[in-house]
Image 1 (cartoon, rainbow, N blue to C red):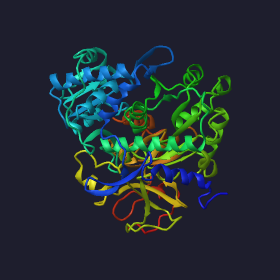
Image 2: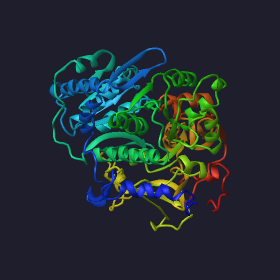
Image 3: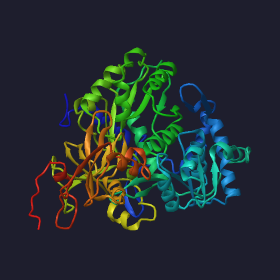
Image 4: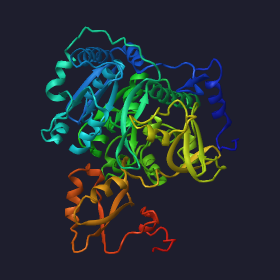
Length: 563
């Protein structure tokens, strides 16, 4: 027998038991940044507290980094010692103190993770700069966050072409070892840290096209960790694992400057004492399958693009992928066909797959759909977990009825306090009573969220946010471009890709290859349009001059008379 939500009643009975008074995930009301809301009563106050407790996991391996051949590994106990020593150096040498920023710019590496934990242990703010940024974008990020220290790898520093970033720099390849060796016997920092102190800044683009630094507090990240633990506990109670099941070993293929890798992997695995393997270098589906087979990996957090590349690889049937028990992710549209193909390639994830919905502004999580419920409702991103509230609102801010499409609003202790030094953008994104206006469009049917569009103009290319306005602004700098518009096109592997439609200035002759190179000079490669169209007629705009993208793509007719 099932209830109106289509799942057995015991699912909700277990959830109620876990969150009831005396339960492992007991709820209580607390004040968070001036607003009363539900939080978990038994919670960890700071990220440093997780680090302190991680010593108890001892010689269990915390992380291993590999390209499939070379390996770098360390245990939980080793990691805590490395972090404590490293944290002393920024404090003593560079004067890093509570509230200061330490920017991290590089590929996934032990240096990235150690710098992160050292920074948050000091009460400072770890800023994850996008490792795919070009030189101008890197300079923008550094100028915006004004770090007391920049820790970066040589490859990213080379993009600055010798220009001084204006802040102290430690190059990972040549200078990081001196930080690690600075104070090998030092204790972890003891600076007082509050739950609502900023811990992380990660950059996400906005409608203006300029990246904004979304702040995640210690409470934000820890709330997300506890929601994941709640989900795992509920699943284990519904389907108790056999006693001889091998311990969990996770594979991470996402970059650390994304919440999916930083919050949902780096932080979560340390807090839960889980071991993980991190793939470095260019993503290679064959390397992923070899690692799953050779290391007997049990879980993998994917984006739609990399999942597509693995499950549709011609060699997928040549490897033993049966060790994988858990497969979950998001970041770009996940089709039902891709989910079904994944169950064929990974035979033991059927019944345990998960997809979700979240943003950097919500610390990576807002709704999840997994296991039995995903089987029943594969087009939904799921229900909200405890402490998280979600509403669909109309243009007037009013809450819409079940099934009506509108803007997705989210509230809870996972919601960021705001954007770094952007009070106006913060006020636009977060209501006075703590609701996040996501800008995403969706509907709720019987408690489940269905996402229709992510930020209307947003293009989700392989899990990366591509905002048309940013590309359009770059093209408008070209001397031969009169006007331009960038729209989304479907892509079988990436989910979406971009198409640029340009109009030449009178007498000019536009060359597509020249335009492509022009964009690549200042935009990360994934932002450079793959598809181009040159038009001679003016692009459709409304009375205020706003580009009508739906008319541009042919999805709608021009519904007013141009004068």
